[in-house]
Length: 76
Image (cartoon, rainbow, N blue to C red; front, top):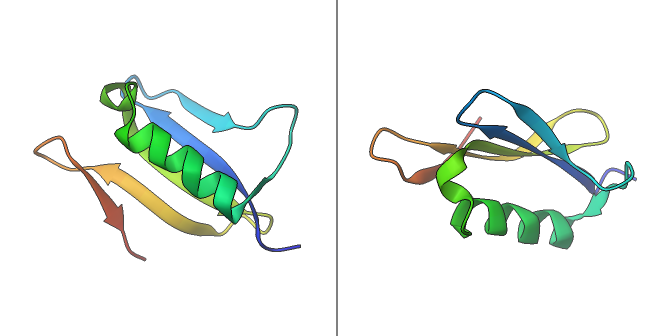
């Protein structure tokens, strides 16, 4: 039950979006693939923060844009 995730995206405008279609949770593989597309894909210039959040609202993985414009993994 706890290895399902939602991907939360923050855009440079401050808009926060939960990347789920119809409220569906993602497996670990699907969440990692979606985060990879958001961080390295064509829309990465619009994204400032990407998080994978589990069913208990714990952040498992987070990428944030640093000062030079590259994404780095944030460790808790």
